[in-house]
Length: 306
Image 1 (tube, one colour):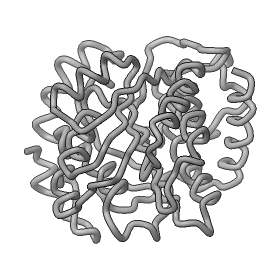
Image 2: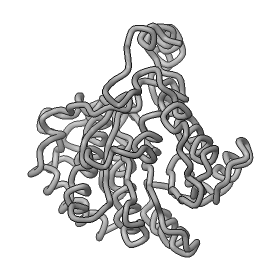
Image 3: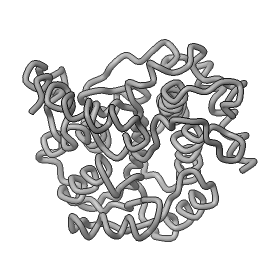
Image 4: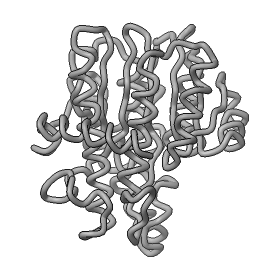
């Protein structure tokens, strides 16, 4: 347990920094429910898969390949169906959409967990900066392609990050989504995580008048495979030291996703950003409905041309 876990108490929800995914789902029966989860094969995704399955849910477990998803399912003996979803390849995302539809299970929730972080140099796909394209556009194509599969009270959960506070000063750089006019690893990552927040916010607006809801969240700072692109000195030396002081464990990191996907009573918070299983104020850009509207229009345009 980290020092922060010891010092931080629980929030109004009754859960907090030190709560685990099992804690927040204790007593919840998910039998008969189906969730789609991206990034199921390691870290937070694998723990989310394990706990949802533990509580009785059927999980459509997505990874970059069917083999990765199958291995994850076997590793924890989950009640799950493996599917491939390479978020940086629209053809793979659309094939995943069709595969999910063919399974015939209405979706009680979609947890958009997969992502890449802090690529040291500019990389692009289809003319767009890779973190924005993978973390946002890939999930945008996936979720919007499955809206008709959602149950009447389904929840869409976007795993964002406090790193959205380090996004470019304009928020979303609509005139530089290629990254060619300027690129920094953390600015671009922050922009992609801000996009996750704005997507959930706008999706929640679209859901008004229905029982469907959408949320975004910061899982906490956790050392997972997401850090694989970081400077080796930071990853291998500073991270292990910091983990003793401030890092969350993987079970703690998966808590807020599981909380938002399953816990009764969160419906009133649709569109909001969460941390430690409680609402948290994002940056001013994370509350910008005009930016959210513009992002939606731009995302539709990008999705229709890739």
